[in-house]
Length: 203
Image (tube, rainbow, N blue to C red):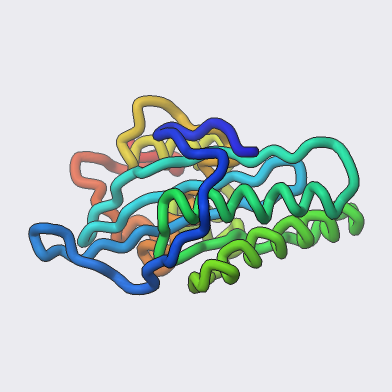
């Protein structure tokens, strides 16, 4: 149901009892696993990272693509696939991007329904859900609320030390998780040693 997963993910996973609080690693450092979601009817991006102290560690990311068909069936794909992702990676918190008002009311309505399916997947697993606007996410991760998608991809790749740029949908989801990890407070909280900002990018 979902594709472009960097670390591999089972296609059929039983829903597990999930932890809802922080846990400590072997060194006694608090660890929080966050699932970021960029909802969409045709493609829903997801990204998972661990917040270990003030560091962010990439876990997995991917994209859930729904087949052309009736709306209820497409929403079911989103719900079930995110349920599989949650069961596989056991996040403790979820961050979802809010719907923006599109010039096309029908598109906005469909996006809202896809977002609802994503939120339901988290709630069925008893996970807390935080919501952020695209402007908040971009401001927090790139330092510019009107940054382009390419800038978000580039920043996510640099901050998480990825070997390549994630897909646009996965990058947006990872950016949402990064934003949540630092309370939407932006680059001031991120470990950016050795980098400097130039035109909305770390260089």
